[in-house]
Image 1: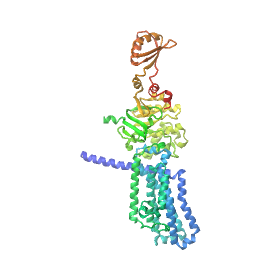
Image 2 (image 1 turned 120 degrees about the vertical axis):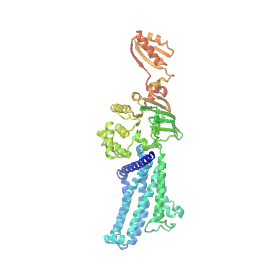
Image 3 (image 1 turned 90 degrees about the horizontal axis):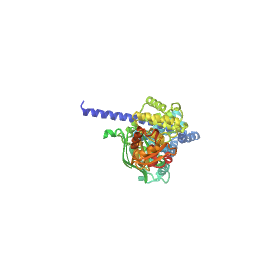
Image 4 (image 1 turned 90 degrees about the vertical axis):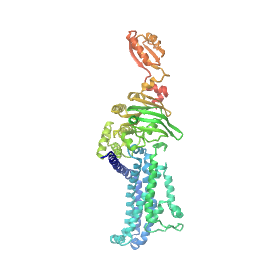
Length: 287
Length: 319
């Protein structure tokens, strides 16, 4: 083999082993972080938050069991309101804020981030691994929570009624859309909150400002509406909801734009996080 | 030149400012294998230098390389470097064993290998028996040792240790110093900051004295002491006829003071050239003019160097 060919082979091997190493490191950090996010006293709050809509849904179904059976169409609208108003705008929003902001900020508060920085891991790989761990944690919690809430709303229909609505009616499409929106919300909000946790010493204030911005989204003019996550998630909802008399109604953005757009914005935000973390110093007290 | 850099820790005109506040200024150093101790009072810049070496801080100016690797390349650097920092904090709820093992898995080691390396490191620092206990329940000394275990577990070539003897009982201190000496003899670089001057003196191959962010002196302690011409070397000679020795000593221009002790069995000498005085002493003894009981250099140690260059020893002992 010529020396040039040998060099090419060596470079290829180095690249392959580098990817293999990154995969191993990501998997290892993922395990550590998921464990951290799911166990310990800190995670109790997040479980309670995730259980809140489940309890409300269960109570609602218990009280209006017969009404739901009689008029499932009306129940779908009630669920759509509950989903957007409570699950999406409150539980998923604050849940993601808690999980993703703590990925870096929590370690700065605990003064343990330097252990990662003193490991032979590229800081960009650390961002990717931490983001993935937050995503796994939030998806497991909030997709499960959404699925349980959907299960409750179908409960009064009984097995055959539910199957009929799911497979002969619009049910399956709606269920998958709701679950998909929850996934996208975790993806988008997760990246935003991870970056907030990296840039701000006290991330609560920007998180609350963001909440305010997302909350008043229905009042904003069309151009400003587009500078939010909720606008795109709202565009995807399968059952339209009435946003009230003061809402400025705009044309929803198509799913073909929304989904890749959100993923692209997420990638850009994560890129920003990588740049930030490359130059990050550990000072703790001086942070 | 490049080959030499790949064996040294090199600082080239490095400065670090925290806003307006000076961390270290214009530091140029080459640190060879062996134990190098950073000594100086609080705020002298010891921890800043260590954090710069490991990329926890970025220099405002200048360049650093550790065995030819920049601190900006953690993927390569931390395969060869271990840092036991002063941060006495740990991830929540982990045992000593989990703490060491979790970061080894981040290195990319498999479970089995990480497990073996963890136990070896914990044994090395005498913590194998407490491996299963939560770090939160450890004493200060145990926490110090588990951090030490974490920094040596991957068998690095360079060990950076910020006050590694803090909180250790005398027995553990002696054992830890023995471990450091053993590692240095194996060819490792050990960069240590410590405020216990006599321990630093005992274990170090070289010292770097820092004050207010500047390197005041560097090299082996005796070499540094020899270069301090403004402070003549003090030597106490216990002998039977100190007057005769004093008469000979005054023949040397470098001897600035000779004081016979009250019991008339000792002579206290201050000289600018200790080697020349020792030659004279040998000659006087060889000629049978005096009989020597002991010769003690009074200020040829780190404490004296510290006192002369930085301040009082009391201040130094709390550095």
